[in-house]
Length: 346
Image 1 (cartoon, rainbow, N blue to C red):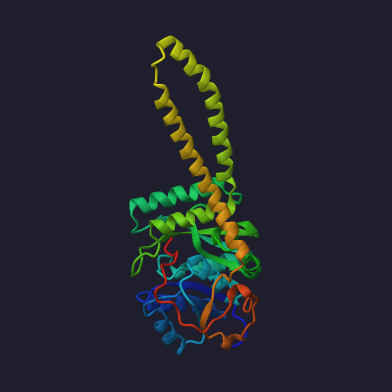
Image 2 (tube, helix red, strand yellow):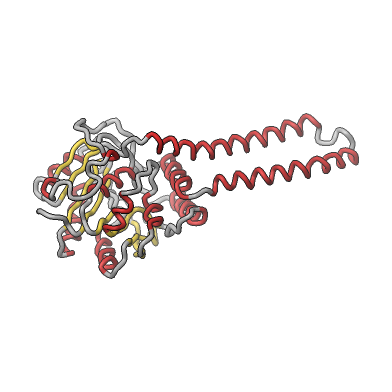
């Protein structure tokens, strides 16, 4: 196929060998119904299993499949960014490779896009096969983000969405290191709408998103789009200051009334010092999170390194922006098989 496709589907993959065949089969079945040229940009995020092998085999029989192999595991949000950089479609669809998000919903998204919407996001009305803890933390996370961030991020949405080309170009111009794609998509604006669906159980394999990565993802979301934690520090400091001023005369009067042994001087002092020390350490932690992100930005390292590309030459190589930018530098080194898990399966 030559020329630019109308639709590009970006799929970040990390150790998804059990899902690749079914995923590609369902994507082909859906995209063939559009009646337009399409491509699938599969981003191998440093997989250590047969994911790349299966993708390469599929590419030999379908020139609409592009494979972008990263030099190591850079994480889910960076893998999505790499896919956006290399997608050439007029509309770009983001979908995970675990088949929890049904590819068949893409047709509804395309219908909304053709009706004039620039962003069509998928809203999870139900989450099948997930623990109560996962559902509860997701419920709290999305509502917390909605209330404290500076942009209106739709509730119960992930990265499963369709983006118009002008939205993709806007996102590609935003090169921050600690990325929260769904927040960035809301920040750029344009005309947006949602479609509801039932999120299914994982087709095969294990989740790549344990509690540790959930917490890190939440920190990236909060610190990337809200000053609320820093503002809370001011309010806590003010509250403690007022409490200290009021406590001095109150304790003095109670000791006069109840005797000098009331509360014990040293015990009270130690408790107050421990309390203040705990708050100070917490405040330093919050400030450190913002400082660490400043450090990441000023280093200006590439967002990712590309180890290999397959299938892009068939699509007018280098047709879209971002191919040779410093943020996506190339290397011919093989993927790092000792890479850590990515931030998928949200």
